[in-house]
Image (cartoon, rainbow, N blue to C red; front, side, top):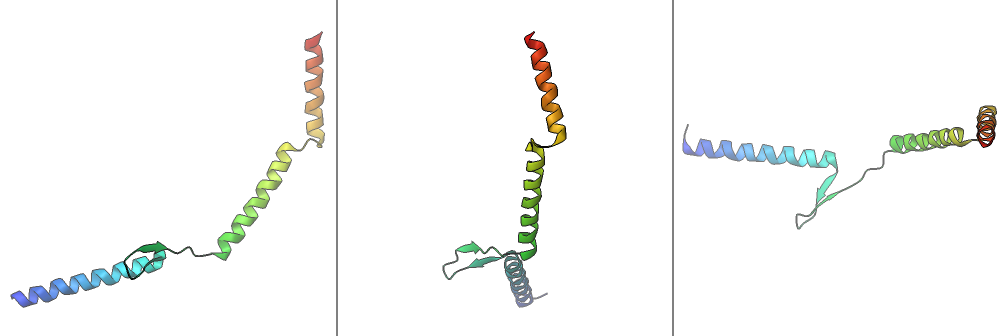
Length: 90
């Protein structure tokens, strides 16, 4: 292998590496301006936004169930708790 062949191979490896690096950055949403400053661009994913909204609604329902005092079960628990407290006072 001659000197110039080695130089061409090294340059080719560098070019392929820079192309792969640019491809990876583009897929990740990273861009660079003219000065070389890199920025991450957030992409809005409608499926992810919809899923977050649905999960927030589920959490609201679960919180309401956990803190709801109008259910028969919570009334029974409150009655038993009151009865225990009245027995302790005696």
